Figure 1 (cartoon, helix red, strand yellow):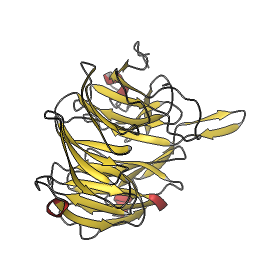
Figure 2 (spheres, helix red, strand yellow):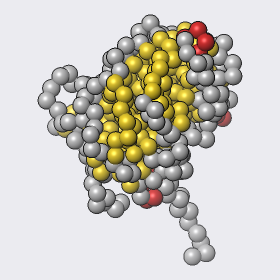
Figure 3 (spheres, one colour):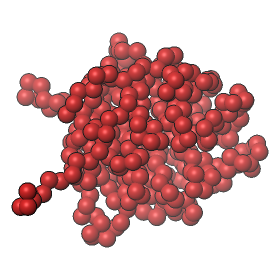
Length: 340
């Protein structure tokens, strides 16, 4: 493994002033959308290290996602779902939940915005509905518990809630889940992310583990699933276990990075069940991760997630690192070749 000369990567100037809830690269450029507990959503050009715009909300912003390269949607603790258009400095409220909105996703397949809330519902919105909740709300779908994480791939939506429930939906028929599952991990779910190839999802917990799951319910399909331990260390004979807050898949190779409260980012080859790389330690907990559309950049939110309560901690920061192929490309299995 080669040591990265830039260590943690380049730090973005003008970061949020409180906990970072999510960071997302655009599908079209190196623009990076950042939501924070300081009530702000910021748009950066990550390559130029420049802040392109900022909106303030009425409460902590718990999630954000892009619509196109200069507009996006946000999930806010003040119960609102908002659309932000950075080019024109314009915002409008798409609609509301009955409790803080925890997650927001935009489906390029259906043109819908999907939000998950602590009010135990999922809502789908049509952002083309000019204004007014009546016109933009497509449907409300009751969940077994508070929504903690959402992920989309194609027409599939995976919803992870409190109580270790996982619901899998087909966006074309939201009347009921296609699959109702329980997390195979014993502890609270932190993050769920679908595989880029659409065959399943990775799910992480507060107890230093990641589960690799598959949608195919046949015996052969389910025989592929497994879970592994990560983000933990032994100290004086004791196992110290950290929450795994973030999962991000590499768009080209399908390998994935995990970020934990131990301040480490690890890269894994899920097919070969191997760790490919560990980046140098970041100043504090990894709150969120995102690869750029071409996989050349990895954005890392180093931001204390209060897993040990209120205590002095390193300032919240976003690091953007250049990704080396050696860090993310699966290593070919070496087969004995009698011909050489």
